[in-house]
Image (tube, rainbow, N blue to C red; front, side, top):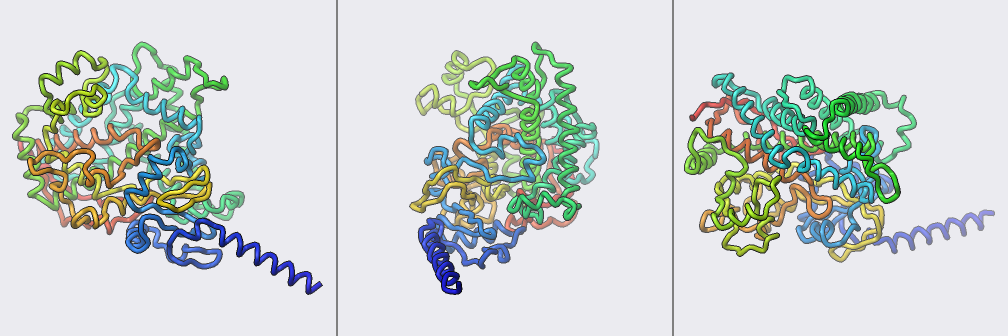
Length: 539
């Protein structure tokens, strides 16, 4: 019997050794780990962006870590990231199974693996941003009206310091509520307050870097809810609030729906559903759970990213008064003080281009852009220069510097594939290290400082889109799973920044808090600190 046991143990060891030798993950460089635990004990969760940054400098374009026994591949270089996101078809377009997020909303297209259903929902999501009412103009009008309301609120404070956290959250909540539900809202409305609360609870309950992440790694623990009362309370509270807010608003919108006068993105979803459109298998194109997931995606993605961007903008302008004055001088040189800056003011529209655009553009599109120029194959001399190049350069530098989603949304390989010469098995979690790409010292001089001039050419104009400095960061992702709300996010930031700088000097109330991105705590996103600001009227 002892000989049989010894032989069996020997065969098992040989099998494990052969399996280990054939494992392609073994060839990917990375820090050594412990048996069973992997690299878990050495990970600094709140500082993971800096830890992976240093590892990228050591291990190169592709590296790996192990979370217990599960390998996670991290792509660091621009070339490796673009290869995975844009050049390998759908190989990297899966999503890892995240039970906590699925408990809150199972039909959020951002968290779904690429499949026919996900493609369908993403297409509907994109159409909803431009297909209702008079089209994209309606969304722009909503943003512009909300900024005017915000300016009135600031003026009522008469120079008293305002906490930027409340200002940023309030401003973005109003815009998102209006975009989704159609009615105009103020931050004191119950809807905006519920949106803010819902988002806070959802992030707390699904934070991948909190102790609750153990349930994503070991889903079977969810069967023993009584052992984890605090965690289960957070998830249940987030789930209840999503149902309470979104389901109630969906029902209210259905009861008052008018196909001749669509109010917001939700009305577009209702129209699709009421037309009883079906997919090729005869299933409804959009059910209530899918509608709930898309409304949640509109709210969560838009609120969290925009509020952090605005918080960082305040820190940048307060830290660097010279930058603030330079941007104000550029705005003053282009616009009268009584002029409210809109999205159309971003470009100098040349007469020839304007005439051609008016003949060709659909009536629902009011903002000519470079992509449309390329579609028409117009001569390059007709491409519109940015009217505020310094401000646009600052926005690019802002997105590069903050890189608030340092690893984007986790990807997963849906089949065996390879990147940068390394084979990666199917069902492997893959992280895009956009934080390293955006702060790569081999590409950017002094990458942890805010220097908008790096994006200006010798003539003071914005460098071309194909310039390496603009190609090396992925704040909104790339390829088929790039953020569909990028245009609206950039529009929000532009309107806010241009109009605030035109009308106010920003002065610090107390000491400037830590504004080094390397010191920001990491949860789902990097979180800049809030600050109290005095808004002094310029005009």
